[in-house]
Amino acid sequence: MLILILGLVIFFAIHSVRMVAGGFREAQVTANERRWKGIYSLISLVGFALIIWGWILFRAEAPDVYLPPDWGRHVNWAFALVAFILFAVSGMPAGYLKHRLKHPMLVATMLLAAGHLLANGDMASVLTFGAFLVYAVVNFFAVIPRGDPAPSVVAPRSDLIAIAAGAVAFGIFGMWLHPFLFGVAAFA
Image 1 (cartoon, rainbow, N blue to C red):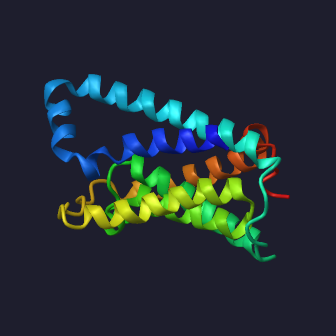
Image 2 (cartoon, rainbow, N blue to C red; image 1 turned 180 degrees about the vertical axis):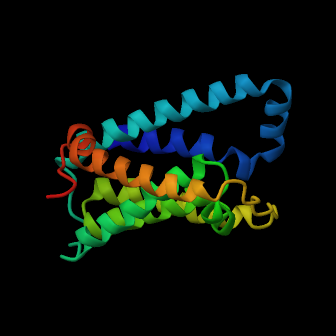
């Protein structure tokens, strides 16, 4: 459990810098954007790897916190599909979806975390996905005061490409990567 918690702390500490120390982040970006992005990425990857490793180690012995509903797994699939599409939307030139949502990656993270909490009731999953859900909700409300303008629609066909790419990534991840990484068949 300690490895999982360490991973969560590292991952969310670096991801929270903009919320809690915006001036520091801006100073780092101004001083050397590539260095900041490199450090940010490295710390994020270390944290994420520890989360995965810690979850795998702890899940076998993690006590159940609650019994998820029978329909939770099906809702999780639907939420995960939409989340994968929104992750793709976040990386594409702005289409109508990115224009409407403004922060599609945060919405995707909320959906993915909430879906997994509906499908899993063990302590390892509750810690992991609960942390992701809390972070995404807090960050979502933290960006509101910044007043970021909605991105202008640049490429409407980006939405179609993102839907196709997200659906394909969802299928590949669910069929092969999820069982390989986590030992759990996503579509079982």
